Length: 272
Image (cartoon, rainbow, N blue to C red; front, top):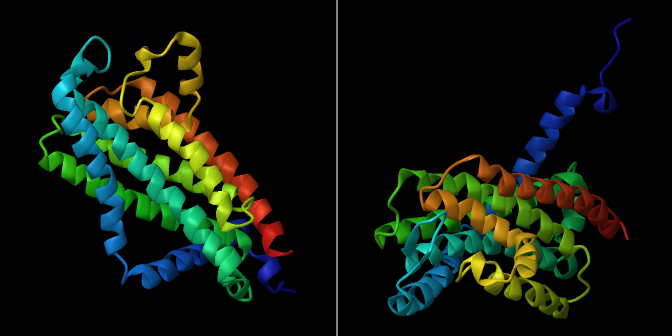
């Protein structure tokens, strides 16, 4: 007698394919909703551009050159630009899985309706992270185009910032997905800023790691934004080597662990 294959007897590969398709449906839904608000992406690109003009170009005329990588030095705007690019990837991804997702989760109750379909909590989580990745990458590409037009890109290795931005987006989108499961109200977003703003200011965005005493250097090196900046700054300045594996592995592990824990917490949140 031939066994009949039902939903529970599908091969694991088939289940994974079906889950991937449902997560893709979540991305398509977001694309349809946000297709009339694409100007918001320009606003996200404009923010790092303004920082670049004020700090990188404005203060850069007073600073001149700063230590770059190794024994060389670079112009201050070229030192700041990749850090702002990494920050744009971080903000573009994390804002989607915190601010925008909190509205769907707590205010609009969007996911309650979605889960009445064959979609699962895991599908929702993967779809939202993938959408955040897409948004963060678009912001990064836009900012990279701007700095290229400013004449700050001098090496083809700078193209490696794009896969780097994808990894940054994955890490922070997953972290944002985890954080949003802990938020109770809109006021809790102040706690996120309490963490994000100091990290932005002190993670070597505007000055080299060497300005800190060694104990503080060790603390800064543990920051995810510092590792993100290193992953982008090195190829942007033409330095490529096995040392890039350190920030790449750091962000991959951070994103994987955060996503794994976030799926479980999101499932409990949506079922309470």
